[in-house]
Image (cartoon, rainbow, N blue to C red):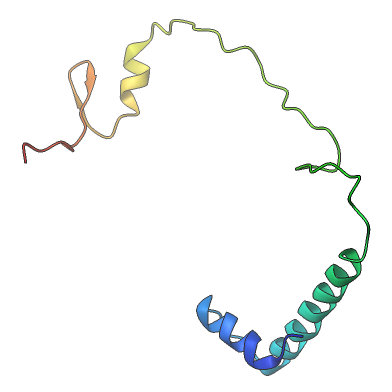
Length: 96
């Protein structure tokens, strides 16, 4: 069972400012959630194989095809800094 003090502690750790009404509401809601999980723990799932989703889902993606883009100037116009036909980026590797 979660009490108001635990809700205040979690809110503090999450850097949330809760009103007393919100603390009471969240205490009730979190206890309802835990009660529901307690009900679920009573189910016999020994014959159920582990899964990450309730239904099978697969991503539909397009084929990735290499296509040349000949308008180099249009691409370079979006660069924050450039050196001729190249992007200019800050140095990130040091000799140390």
